[in-house]
Each structure stands twice: as C-alpha cells, then as structure tokens.
Length: 402
Ligand code: NAD
Ligand code: MG
Image 1: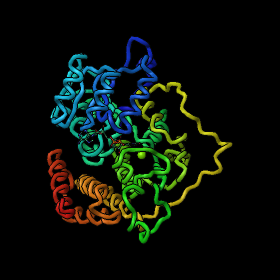
Image 2: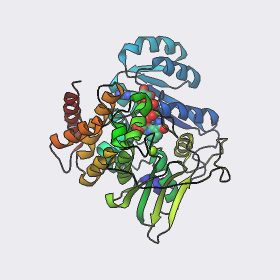
Image 3: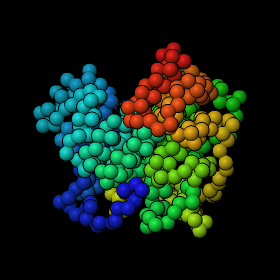
Image 4: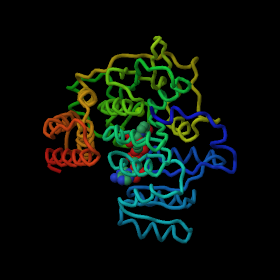
C-alpha cells in the first residue's frame, strides 16, 4: 500500500510556524511549477522553497530564485550556466548545471518534499533519487509511474516515503481514500474532459493543427500534456499511473468522459458506494493538498456553485476514434516494459506533432509500430526500463526521420 495513504494526521506537520516544510520544485518554470510557487507564496508561513530546477528557461528560473531565495537551483541546459551563476551567486544561491545535477540536487538534505513537476521520462531519475534519499514526493510527473511504476512504488514502500499524487484525478481518488485504509476498492472511475476534440471523428482529426490541439477547454497546461489530453493518451497514462499508485488491477480502472471537469474522479467500494471529489478545475488545489497533506489549508480559490452550473454529464470514451487511449489500455493490461515503450514513443510523436512533422492521427501509428517492434519484457529491471525507453525513442524517431 502507498505509504502516504496510511499516514495518520499529525497536526503539526506544517503550520506550526517554526517548522516550515522545505519544498524542492523540480520543473519550477512549468505550468505546475509556477502554480506551486503561487501556492507557496500564499502560504509562506507553512512552506519554504529550497531547490528550484528548470530545463532551459534560465530567465524565469533566475527571477524565481531572486524572489524565493532557495539554497540551490539547477539549470539543465549547460549553455545557460554562466548567465545563471552570474545572476545568482552574489545572492548566495548555489547554481548547478546539466542533467546529472538534477540527481545531485535530489540527493541533498536541504528539502523535505520534492514536487516532481518535470515533464516526461526526464523526471524519473531525480524522483527515484529523492525516494532513495527518503524525501516525500508530491508527484505531478505521471510518466515516472508509467515507465517504472512497480520499481518506484516498491522503493517508496521500502523507504517508507509517501508518494502523494498531484494529478487532479489521482488527488481526487487519494482524497476519497482518506479514512478508508481497511476498505477494499472495488473500482475507480477516472474522469476525462474529453479534450478540445470531444465528439469529433477521424475525418476531422486528420486535419487538426498544433495551435488548435493546444487549446484545452478546461485546463491551461504545458504543451505535452495538452496534446496528450487532445489525443486521450493522457487518460491512458493516468490509468497506468493509478494502477501503481493505488495497487489496482487493470479491470478495476474505468474511464468516463465528463466534459465539465467538476468531478475529478471517483472510488467505488465493495458495498457499491461511490465517493467522488469535486471542485472547479484548478491545479492549485491538488498541488496545495499534496504539499499540506494530511492538513487542509484555507484559500481564496473560486468555489464551485451548484446554482450556476446547469448540469454535469457523463459518456463513455470513444476509443475507436481516440485510438491512443485504446493502445494505452493494451499497455496497461499487458504490463512489463510495454507502458515504458508506449510512453517513449508517445513523447517522440508529440514532439513530432508539435513541430508539424506529423499529423494528429499519425501519432497513434508511430506509437503502435514502436510497440510492435520493441521486444516484450515481462518483468524488467530498472536498467531494462531505461533500455526499452531508449530503444523505443530511437525507433520512433527513425519513423519520423528525426
Ligand atoms: P511544462 O512543460 O509546463 O513544464 C515542464 C517543466 O519541466 C519545466 O520547468 C521545464 O523546464 C522542465 N523540463 C522539461 N524538460 C526537461 C528535461 N528534459 N529535464 C529537466 N527538466 C525538464 O509541463 P507541466 O504541464 O507543468 O507538466 C509537468 C508534469 O506534470 C507532467 O508530467 C504532466 O503530465 C504533469 N501534470 C500536469 C498538469 C497541468 O495542469 N499542467 C496536470 C496534471 C499533471
Ligand atoms: Mg490529470
């Protein structure tokens, strides 16, 4: 069982004034990272930022660091190292650079909780390092669990490290499970908005362009997850994420389209009772919940108003049209290294689509062909997960002539 769910409310974990929780934000310049900084700024009596990391947006990283005064920052793009160091060293902030620096920073004892908000496979190694380092994890980076969920959760259990979901659906399920540790889950229902192309058919999707696909109706997110939401791959990745977070069998995970994104997900128990967590779509809430868990802290976020919302509707997903969800379900059921292969091929095809190298529907072809090509491994080691990722990435890139 995820150690986080068993954690008893302690009362003084945050908020006692002198014991501020030290947060390391990996991926601080992204959509989740910047919203997390807003939450921290509004709760500076409870949280303090001690590490910030970014891939290449050093200007924003510098701005954030001068404002929040962390102990250290990491800029992955080494060509930005000198400019970052010049801007921050006089402020006494340590500047580290390069990919390895992410793991070095994760190994520091300067933080209590890592907010894992890097996008993609790149988030896996630093998150594993943080677990090894015994730090709690607020997990936004779903790809970490899609690629190597069994190993990540196993290590978290061994280290008694809580892994608290930030993804809104998983946060919803997590919230529904508080107080239910002895009660078996019959199934979970992950809600999906359906994305910008809900109700569309392949003859429409074939001509969809990047600008259109990036426009999500309910959420304002990074580019990769926005495309994943438009193809419904995001929901497939979330099914796999849920399997590992909550120790479920694939048959226990259902997806329902709920275009209003008010019910963030549901748990059905053995007596048939369904618990749902609801609210307006705003990632700051699950971010805040993960950082403050097991406490809830007051905020001024807009509230959902039943008298203003005409209706909440539900329908099954159209996996004939949105085939990425279908192939992700295949990876979920078959397991082994297939989710890692799916994830790598998806990252490459999203990259290709964002650069107008392939069309919207071609993404599925690239992923499917990669899943057929890479040899199946039923119970991979961590190294084999990394190898499968690399092989899948190379093969998918060759299909795109990248
Ligand atoms: P984003 O693209 O806005 O930000 C990504 C962050 O990761 C940036 O700080 C970037 O500098 C960093 N980064 C990118 N590539 C990197 C690399 N190779 N090495 C190191 N750092 C790198 O992404 P986002 O929308 O904030 O999403 C972050 C994660 O959270 C994703 O895994 C996503 O699936 C998940 N998530 C996001 C949302 C959302 O609303 N944005 C909701 C649920 C889950
Ligand atoms: Mg989600």
